[in-house]
Image (cartoon, rainbow, N blue to C red; front, side, top):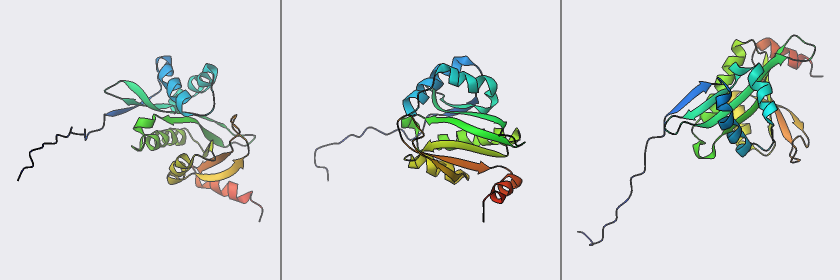
Length: 184
């Protein structure tokens, strides 16, 4: 039996826009990367900071692109260097950002896993990063991947917020060396 009133609902799209994951290629991608990072991260970075990472380690930076809109919706920027006086190679995740409207779709995890794989292929013994002490979703993301809290850095960021340094051991011998240094 009909009540005489009809309600029409607009169908909600069930498909998400296709996403392309691409490696950093050239400065033509830089404006989109910078806009996303400036919007999402608390630290201000100059163009020289971006160029420092992108020119020296271009194969360690990746973008997630909305194929329909041709816009950068996620980015990770990394480096790989020898650490201190040791011969170990330390990867570093300098920046990770995902546009708010695209979160909870595993874009950040995918970018991190792509970067980790590239750094491991290039011989990384460990990978580190810093994240705000209050950023529980980032901490959870990294811990799901296998990162551990290494230390708390007090008033680390310019806004006065503490950070956690997180570390991922890439090789069993790197983890053994780290545990050997812990006093018993």
